[in-house]
Length: 77
Image (cartoon, rainbow, N blue to C red; front, side, top):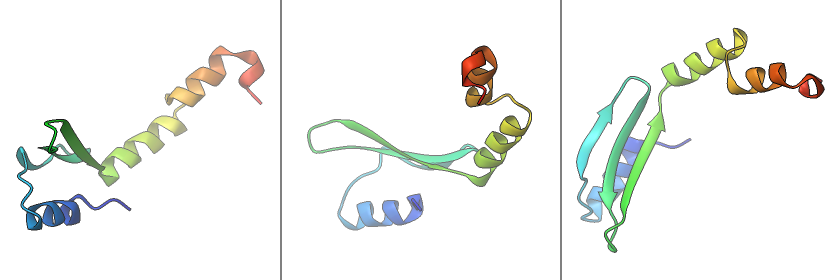
C-alpha cells in the first residue's frame, strides 16, 4: 500500500523540496515536487472515505461500470 507520509520522509531525507506540504482533502492526501528536469509530479494517496464512497456508488448502481452495463444490453452478463 502506498504511504505518502513515508514517501515525504524519504524525499526530504534526500533533500527534495516539496512544492507544498501534504494536504488532506478528506478523500485523498496530496503533495508535489518538481523533478530535476522541472517536471511537475504530484503524489496522491486515496483515503478510506474515498473507497467507502466508491462502494456506496457501486451498491446504488451509480458507478461507471454499472452505468456502462445498463447502457449496453450485451454487457449485462
